[in-house]
Amino acid sequence: MIRVGVLGPVGSGKTSLIEFLTRYYAKKFRVAILTNDVVSSYDAMRIYENLVRKDGILPKDNLLGIVTGGCPHTAIREDPSLNLRALETLEARVKPDLVFIESGGDNVMSTFSTALADYTIFVLDTSAGDKYPEKGGLGISESDLLVINKVDLAPYVNADLEKMRKGSMKVRKGKPTIFVSLKSGEGIDDLLKVLNEELGLETSPKG
Ligand SMILES: Nc1nc2c(ncn2[C@@H]2O[C@H](COP(=O)(O)OP(=O)(O)O)[C@@H](O)[C@H]2O)c(=O)[nH]1
Ligand SMILES: [Mg+2]
Image (cartoon, rainbow, N blue to C red; front, top):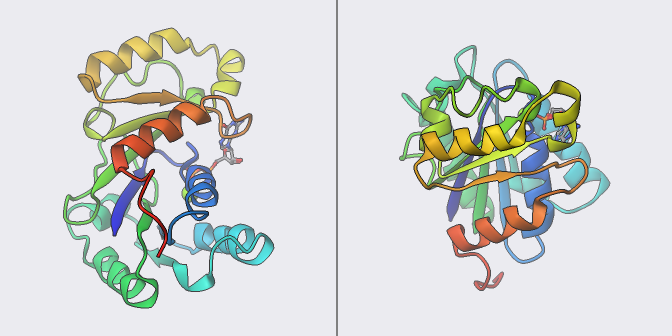
């Protein structure tokens, strides 16, 4: 089971990314999703509605949502026990090849415990301004992959993508950064190419 942690600020596109990747990978692999929300089961309910009920992409047993309380980074870093237990439940229920774990949404310092995630994707979006990624933060610099989402909005918020690209190179020391729009589809091929390579997912069959 490959555990992919998805984190980043509220509204950057974490759930949208997980929904997109699940649609893609579920054709070949057993995919499960574990969401973290601070006070509700909102994301789990949204994913249930879209992927389970409407589109039938995800069996309902493959989805689990937990409520972390007000400090979402604690549940993915200092004390991931709630998430680890939820993963055990998913493992026993569906034996997934691939699990996406969505953080409840946090600031740029947020990171996943290595006990919980094998690979981490930090999601930023252009509408937060082009001061990031250069302004830095542990999550931005240390994540395995930085996804900068909502490039379609960049012109409306005067976000200079070249500045963001340079900033990212500066703080991430060679680790990959991909620019996408989950709305228009721009950059998606690059994203899948990097993820397939990094996760070694191209060849292993569903079984
Ligand atoms: N314009 C635009 N909106 C997007 C894009 N990706 C996601 N959104 C919207 O941004 C909002 C927050 O997305 P969501 O996936 O819920 O973010 P999360 O809080 O990080 O999980 C939603 O209204 C999405 O429809 C994108 O690439 N472009
Ligand atoms: Mg979300």
